[in-house]
Length: 143
Ligand code: ATP
Ligand code: MG
Image (tube, rainbow, N blue to C red; front, top):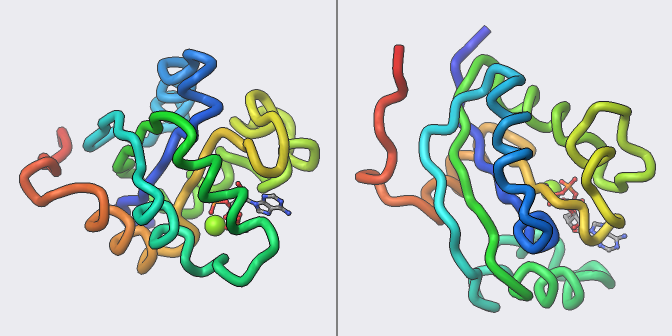
């Protein structure tokens, strides 16, 4: 197994409901390490660029509206097979279809307001980390 870094967002519905700590605890309990984390409020431009792959989808406008509706918590997570293991911990996009014990099953409100984002590939993880964090914000993790 290879040590990887992935990128996570606690979306506005999670921040609004004051469950940042509960979610980060679940991430840590899964064995992943939080390398960097911060609260931010995405601009419309940032949301549109971040979700550009979905720009032709009917829900794109709604998605960008939602992602800019309040603050989010962006984090860099590190661990063995971090990309896949974090996707597994998050659960399916639609919380009603997410497996029991996953973050989206426990906290997700709807397919749109599904509490979390996690990178889908190692390549996208690197792009997303670099989009939201500068090199000086990324410390070496504890060994
Ligand atoms: P994310 O990229 O946020 O981690 P994902 O990879 O599970 O989620 P994607 O297919 O990439 O799912 O969709 C991106 C986001 O767009 C979803 O997390 C959700 O917030 C929103 N979304 C996806 N499908 C729909 C839909 N049918 N209706 C409304 N919103 C949707
Ligand atoms: Mg996705």
